Image 1 (tube, rainbow, N blue to C red):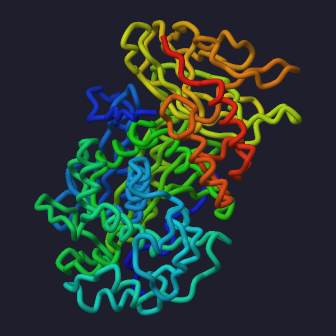
Image 2: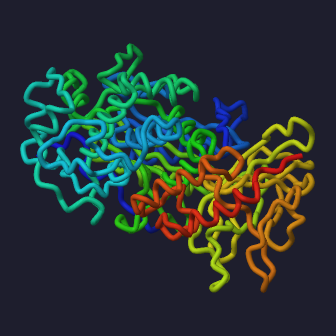
Length: 551
């Protein structure tokens, strides 16, 4: 059987006004000792496993970028850092982020049903939502698992398949009714591409360039078939054969938004720094991306996999497409990104990425920045009967200068624990000094520290909004509990406009009317159900004119 691109691209491993602060090419000189050891890691793995070539990179905030290559593109030509390689199903993370950005712009909604944007297809329940495509709970059959799929695609390598032709030719009976379980399916992201194209009114590549690649300066990344790039592409290898001479039009048009992107390791590592460093999507969107579904065993979110490696939590994805394999990881402890791109099938890129991670951990670098443990209760989530929040959830801390106009110096996204109310926010750009700390949760009022707080580079600092109302600027906290005495940040700012008002209530009422269940911005109480209790909290805060209070 010939494998074109993977039918299963993840394996759990057990070993506000949005401003984009682009993480650009690093000006830091990477540690020379660690450089040598990382290079030795990829050289030794490639030699021992005898595969053709690998391009890898590591970005550690405050320490810079390492990029290394080993092996060849093809006979007589070494692989180079600038060469493009196919990234396979890592395309899905780009497409998920693009969909979330379009949702932020109110172009689409994740709860939109398929029939709103695309025609009906046999074997596709048209009431499936965009969210169910993104997290693979749709139940839709994966076209790449259809017997004879690979032979059909390779029969005429110059054929350009439309997504409609792909669905009509290779779809089969669904795995299960929508929302009932989890099954990785490439078809989900092909349909997502059709929706993006329909909603945007232009090619997916045009929207990808406009909203992601151009703003972030990812000039060496592209969606194949829709774009033609003249620069050097590393030759793909399969079964010991250089298959570069075989046209890839059929292969790439069939994979499309499920797996047809190309990039280099530097661009993809920088992409992960921007995405998981909280610099690209709004915190509410990141919360949705990182909502790992119970159906998947809590390892798959929206286009991203949660890995647990030696007790460390990492976000990422892996991918392969005929002749290439890839892995991208983001270590949530060090805020470090790792990319491995290989120009040969049958190689495990995740294992190489983990080896690079372990190399870094065995050779620790001097600490830069601040580890801030911040505690806060989310008003709507708090259940005083149990003295805890109903769920843990992500929030974003912004560190601002202590003087007007209070410019953002750094930001970090972390999870506020439901029991301890605390999260560890790693701030890599902060130098010693006094700063305002601001906290933003997806449906709560942004809250500022009472005064500028002294933070010391290289240290572990703490701040909390729980024990005393005066810890917030303007005493802008709600009473959460009388015994023990606890305060919370105000809930109800659903649309992120810094005030709780009738517009927020309207959105809550609309979702309550349709009995919305799941991870919704309008779920103020965190019980995965939008109902009158959510509206009650927002209504009370609107009546009291609750809004952001700033210096």
